[in-house]
Image (cartoon, rainbow, N blue to C red):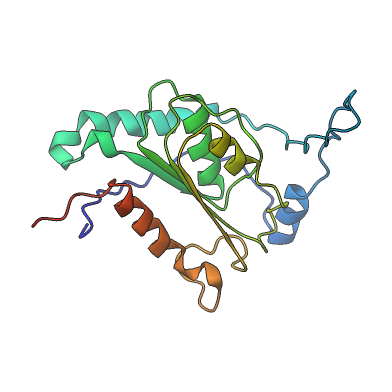
Length: 200
């Protein structure tokens, strides 16, 4: 609040995942289909993309929340030109899905945190992106396709690949380089003027 941010927590429908962390890791690390063979042997094969998951229910929840914020923006003191979306893990996936597929959400910025890194087709009206992941995250496969997609589209993107932090480092893992990601995010918001101007 002292930064002039009105934060809203989205409660959305989730897909069930395996109950144990080990089973979840195995499920997420399952082999993907091999990429289609290219007739040009000089080209590097496109990295296989993970199986797509139906996120229509989750997108509906996000769009409903967005519409409510717009409707009550004056009551809540929200500047509708600066509405952004940040998500962690599955929330990062929903943040990206909303950015790529929503017809009603107009986001000023996005912050997918330790989410998928595969390449995407970037909409012309896509917002600036702040992206964070740790190199020892068990979901990180050494891909930077998402960052490259944003960069090639000419849309501002800031990316931090941390030496360590694992998956789900959030705000509270000391002795890991990822522990300062939130400071970097706040600085990025300030430099890009997404925060409320400081009173003189």
